[in-house]
Length: 333
Image 1 (cartoon, helix red, strand yellow):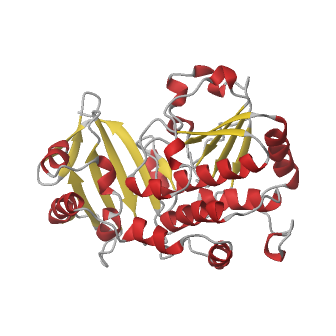
Image 2 (cartoon, rainbow, N blue to C red; image 1 turned 45 degrees about the horizontal axis):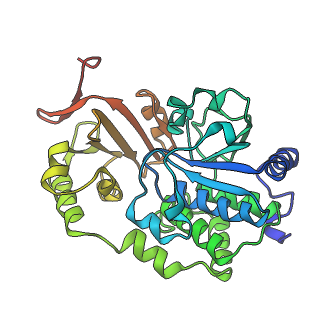
C-alpha cells in the first residue's frame, strides 16, 4: 500500500472499511445510486466504483432518477446508467454523494430500500449527511465523494485503471472547481498527481467541465448575471425562472457554474442563486468565500444541507420579483 494511504492515514476505522469490503465481496448484484440532478462528483464516484467492482466479477449497475449532464458522458460506462431497477433482485445498494436520504429519490418508489432488509452502503462527504445506510462511509472533511471512494479503492487494493482514474479525477475536479476552491488540500493535489500517473484523461476532463459552453447556456448566464443584486446582508442574489429556460432553450443543468461568478464579488459575504426546476420547486444554491459563515446551517432552515462554504436546498414554490426575488407558494405566504 502506498505510504500516503497507510492505515494510519485512512479517514475511517479499519473495521468499518473491512465490513464494507466484505459486503461487496459476498454480494453479486449491486446497484450504485447517484443523487438526483447528478453532478460531476456523483457521476465520477459512481462509475469509478462500478469499474472497480467489475474487477471482482460483480454485476454492478449505475442508477439515477435524473438524466446525466452532457459532461458526464465523457466517462466510460456513463451510457449504461439506468433510471430504475428491481430491488428484489438486488443484493446490495450503494449511494454516492447523497448528503441526505432524500437525495437518493428511489425510496419514493421503493419504500423498502431503507428498511435494512437489503444492506445499504452510504458513501459521502457532506457534514449534513443523516447516516441513512446500514453502513455509513462518510468522510465529512473530504473534498469530494470521489476522494472518499479513492480511499476505499486504495485500501481494498483495487487496480486504479485509466478508466477509474478518469472517473475519480472528474469528480474531484468538479467539487474543487478545478482545484481552485478552498477544499483543495495537499492530499487532494497528491491524489490528483497519482491519478494523472495512472492515466486519467486530464485534457478531456478539463475541457468538458470548464471549457465547453453552448450558446444557449451563455444566454442563460447573461440573464442571471444581469439580475445580480447586492442586498443589505452583503449577499449577491440572482434568480432564473422557468420562462428563462424556455426562452434561452436551456435546461436547469445549464445553471451549473454560474454561481461561482456570483460568488466572486469581493465585497460580498455570500452568494445565492434561486432557480425554478420546471417541477414546481425552487432550487437554492449558496456559496461563500468567508471562513466565518456556515452555509450548511442556512440551507438546513429550508430542509437542505451541504458544506460550510457550498450548500443548497429545494422547496416547493415559484419565484416572484419585487424589489428583489422572493419565493412564493401555498406554505410560504
